[in-house]
Image (cartoon, rainbow, N blue to C red; front, side, top):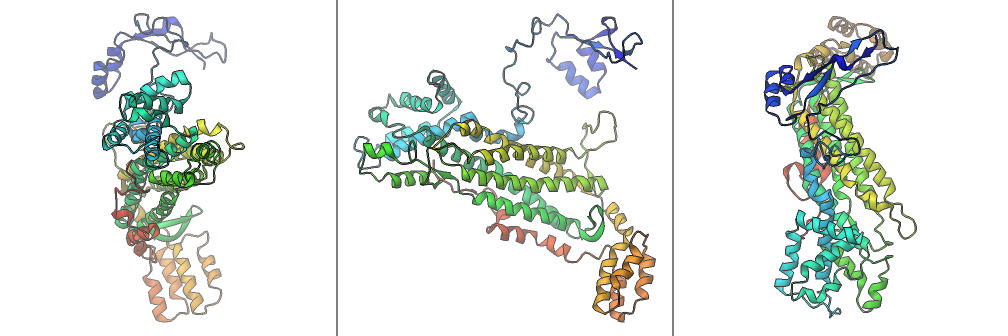
Length: 561
């Protein structure tokens, strides 16, 4: 059958027509919508047509001409595409904005400009404290307050002013310098030392510290707290489900039982270990001039210990000083940081897939929400969309973070500019990671254990007791224990009765035989329940401090900026 449409087959649908086709709650919202105030859609029916040649499948749909906004618009008319949730190229800035906007103050262009302003001002204040630099005397309290106010009060309007200056300079860091000179020109004290803004600095002196501060604050305020929330949720699941027995699966086949809680505790501890690695990465900074040797510094002020000054300055920002650099800080710490986040994400992806599988097996039900739809054609569907969303975003995050970690440590000779454009994408990797973490948390809230199905699986799997039986047989010298159990169980249906009959015929001490007869797939769980109940202790030992007891703490060294 070929599908085709002609102009004569078109039917006009207005908002009221569309409303009649929708469920009542949606129809009411649509009827009140201003999305299509005058616009009508030409609904085009698709029909079979023998007259159409095979493979000629076409559909023509148009917007009615009475919509003034759409008249004369073609693919080159971009005036209507101002940035919004609908026009953003990245879904992080569009569809998912509300879930990742906590990163915006740090990882956006605004954040980068703000931290550049901070570094420039703090450097000027540092110069005023160096006795050998008499041209920049110690600032009065009022002058210091004025400069600090420029940092604390930095806003979107200020950032836009910097961008306007950049249109002239075509240099983003120089635009910040000119912005600060303009802001300080009216101040009688600071105006005398305006040329000491950006003194002896290369742009990368400012940028590398700004990028490190962006990462530090983004991780502290937006990312690590959600990581901790994830770990806490898994610990809660581990303790809550500590005693619920579950059939294990190795290679997808029934294996020795565990408990649902113990399986959750594994992920809590694994994620804790990577979370610790992330917080242990030293965020580094340099401030050594054009090629890392303080060339200009020493010509201007040869008697100043510039290496010590630079170290003190970098440390005052809560960063680790790197004395061996070229024009750039070599970004090795960024590679380490991003690799640690990648591994955290890999573990969480493993968790997402396991939960997806447990839902598929019926071990978890998902709590439904009124109005939600699982499938556009299969009304019964309740899909594990949160875990799938998380897995997809973790993959996207890791692709970007992996590229950053491989690219950033490589720079030609003393510096090339390839890192500049790449560094502007750090927020992408963190954004997709944060989105994934929140999706997993959202999915966890919907989970409801189906204990009846877990019990049913265990009751159908008495063959898993072959392992403890043959192990006890080995202890008491029964010949060929493995082979005997293999003959009994492999590829055969094993019931409670057949297993008990086999145990009864074994040449074992009565006490050993009685203990084996007490075993069921439900009770053969080893120390799984105990491991699950002790998960908080394990997580805190992994991290060295009580992560679960210190929510809201600073994860990297704090500094008063």
